[in-house]
Length: 342
Ligand SMILES: Nc1ncnc2c1ncn2[C@@H]1O[C@H](COP(=O)(O)OP(=O)(O)OP(=O)(O)O)[C@@H](O)[C@H]1O
Picture (cartoon, helix red, strand yellow):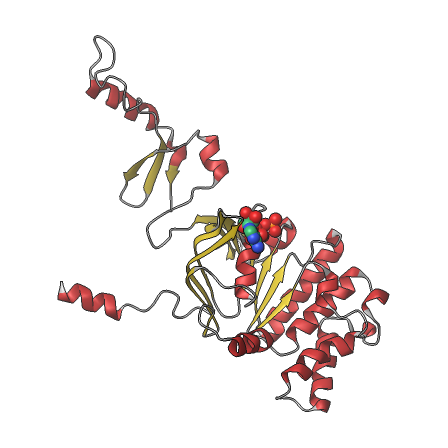
């Protein structure tokens, strides 16, 4: 018992080596006496230097999570930290510093990202000026110009937002978000108002920022192209992370040919709960209850074909319950579609 207590104490904390840690995050909104649980115990770990996408149906809790990570909203319960800042226990001053120095954000609405009466270079300089300390004026200007060049927006240096295309405005918004060299860049539907070609340009800009500056980037998107171009896509369902798609480059041992392999994983939360993808459960008619079997190297999940619990246990005349259990096993055995292979 004592040994177990010691080993529990010695175990590293959940997400101790992640840059972003969300641990059983809960956010409840109360409007007119009605409670909405926007986040219901969400777990998420993001490593330093990752470029990842968050996807999910409307109302699944993506924006709620982004607002919390951006320091604009406070969770009801759970724990969340970004680059060592505890998002539940920050006073107003620490919160302001967090939003200015640790995170940068790009919103869907281009108008929310840039001040309309400032030129691009002035918009990029503004966060550095508001920060006050750090770079001197000449160094700020140099840094701003470097960002504009890196994001291929230097031709818009002296233009105001209304003189620029939607794609140019979003690239300028990324430069503004990167001005104070944040640890994390958050983007909520940054390509939502753009056509798909321009959306790809914006995504390329995120990729450049990630590769050249090493900034950790989290993008909420409905855009399938964006979601499929990142190495990791996390799906949120009903306020929890439900599944992840990881993409890896694999090299064929014989031909040496490289290919991108995508695998879908379900998330196992710390209470052992697992959300099966809705299209899987629907295609096998799984509802309410499933049959589990522990195999040597995987757990099999079967549709529940057992009779309702209030049905006679003995079945009809002449049938015995053991043989009917045997039939069920025989029926389901070859149809291993429900098996959850690792
Ligand atoms: N300020 C609020 N007050 C009350 N309910 C809210 C508030 N913000 C969000 N919700 C509710 O919380 C749930 C999650 O909303 P959220 O905006 O996070 O979802 P989403 O996945 O970002 O959706 P979308 O893709 O449509 O933006 C929804 O049921 C929403 O109605």
